Every structure is written in structure tokens, then in C-alpha cells.
Length: 403
Image (cartoon, rainbow, N blue to C red; front, side, top):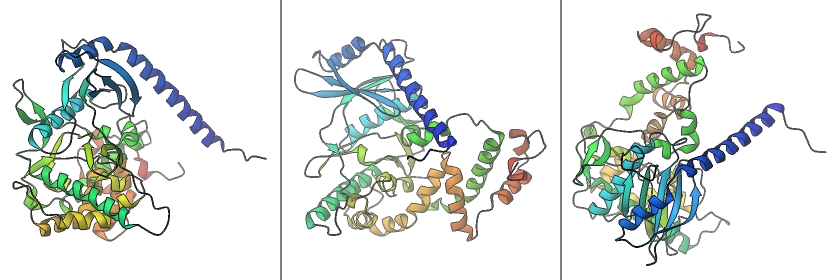
């Protein structure tokens, strides 16, 4: 006889199923508004008038991608953000497109060629959606090389080192492309690149968490504790800022280097790097373990020791790179995991998860949330004005846990 599930679990599963159905309906309704004949016309114009037809499509957490087919055999992709899921879809799409154009022009990093892009709000946009039309790169997602046995072959080790050598080269080349401030890449009407205002691009980097983080805080306790968490995290910031890099150089970041965003051929040559967020950040933010090491994947390709050895020993062939010194790389990588945790902590709901870990690492004592939240409330004169107390005159941490 099967064991019955608790009512709470059953309700949660039912709610999740309803959300999935609602999302499918939302996607279908949105797709109906897209003028695909205009989309194909734009693609055709930017390929010298060659006819374009639509192929299959895939729906992701924040974008829908349509295949573009041309009679000369060239394949393209139309990437369209889902406005009901994607935070700042116009700004992030522009930043992504401009970053790919910049890298295509100024680096050897294998990124797709951008044929055209436009935001939905543009007066002359007849597609009725924000879009990026770009080249479809060859290759497939990077295999993790899961260990099926305890024995590891020389061929597997060689493949992993080959991948990490190429990733090291990509990081070293990105560091050679320097900017004078933090922000997001943009281009003017003449095609000149510049660093504009910073936009939240991590919505596309951490979809399963961002959907929650960008939602409304339904309970007062969520709001006041979230504000306190950020204040406490800000107190720790000084431990993660590397003084010699606080004024630059600033470099293009890629905080979403997952196995899905690294394309390789059958010989483990990297054929494409996808989903650059377009943010320009302090150099140390790039000198960390790529996200594939934190993406709940298992396999030889996520062996930190192999990557670290490869990254530190790789000779830098980019003259303008600020990471020629292997000793400097070693110093930066020695604090990489803590710095990465701090930067992840800047994004709710990671904040409440990361804060206690970093607090304990720095202060060598457990994080007592009630004590620390109360200290923040008492020492920030603005706190009560931003997050007033509850109807009972108390903050959430001042109440008994059973209340």
C-alpha cells in the first residue's frame, strides 16, 4: 500500500503544477503577439536579402529561441526575452547583444555574430518584441565527464586539461580588455562602444532563484530581515575588496559560465561561449572559479584542483592582460571562493544563506540573527522609517518563534 503524502507537500506540488500551466499559457499568449514575418524580414535584410524561414524553437527560463534557416546553409538564432519572466528585458538584451559585438570585434573569444537587435519599445519595431538575431554556433554543451568508475583514463584527464586551458585563455583575454568604470556595455548610433549604467543582468544567470527574488515581499518579516541582511552583508564588504583593484582596471565579466553556455566539438575544442551578461566589473570578480564549479554538476570537468593548476600555470599570451603574473593569479584565487560567495550574497534570496557562512568565517563565531538584526535596527536611524514595526510594535525577530 502506498504511503500518503503530507497535505503540505501535496499542496505545494499542486501549486507548482498550476504555475507551470500558467507559464505555458503566458508563453503561448506572448508568442501570438510576435510578428514572425517581420522578424524573418529583418533577418533577411541583415543577410543581404537572402530569404529566411523559422525553424524549431526552445523555451528557457527567461528567453524563447527560434531557429533561423537560410538557403545558403547558414543557421541563425532569434533570441526573444519573455517579458513576464525576464527582469529588465530590454536593457539586458541590449547589453548582451552589444557585448557579443564588442568581443567579436576586439577578441578571439568564440561568440556568435550579432546580425541585428532591437527593443520592443522602439517606435520602428514591427516585430512587437525585443529580439536579438545572431549566428548559431557549432558544437554541443560541454560534457561533465561523470566518473562511472574509480579509474580515470589519461584521455579523460587530457580532455579536462584541454578545456580548462581554453577557459584560462578566455579569462586572461577578457582581462586584457580594460574599461575605466563599472557598468554595462552600450553602443551609440555610430557603433562606438561605451560603458553605460549598470543593470541587473543576473536575472538570466540564476533563473530559479531570481524569480523569487524579484517578487514582492509578502510578509513584513521578509522585508525587515532582508533589509537587515543587506546591511550586515555591507559591513563585511571590506573583507572582500582588494584595495589595489578598487580603482580598476574594470573588465567584462561572465558570471554564468555553466556547461550549457560552453560549446565544444567532439575533440573538446571550445566552439562557443554564450550568454555574456554584459557587465563591466572589477578585475577580481572575473578571477574566480567559473560557475560550472558551483552548478550542482558532477564530473571530472568540475574538478577545482585541475582548473586551478591549469589557470595558475598557463602562460599569458595577451600583452595587455593584467594577469601575466602567476603569483598575482595565485593570490586572487586564494580568496576566490569567499569573494564569489560574497557577490552571490548580494542577490536575494542568497543573502540569508550566504551571510551566516561569511559572518562565521570572518568573526570565528556563530551568526546570531536576532542579536545582529536588533543591532542594525538600533544603529540605523533610517531603519524604522523604511521598515516599520508590526501592528504589535515588534519586529519579526523580537517575537517568540512560536508566534
